[in-house]
Image: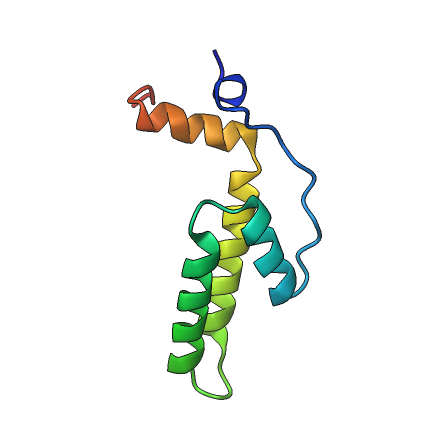
Length: 91
């Protein structure tokens, strides 16, 4: 049985993620449990540690969490993660 059928994972149409507020909404709806809270913590820490003219750390946090939303919405990736977790991965 595939992880998609077993766990009900199916691709959901993702909203456009163009702003940090878009990402917040997507994390709340499509993210892994706890992602939204961790995102806020990591973003605040990255901004706090950044120079005023270099927000690359904050941008990296945004990119990482945007990627997590995409991963969470991919039945193929989720099935592979489940297989690896269950010890079914090859290698």
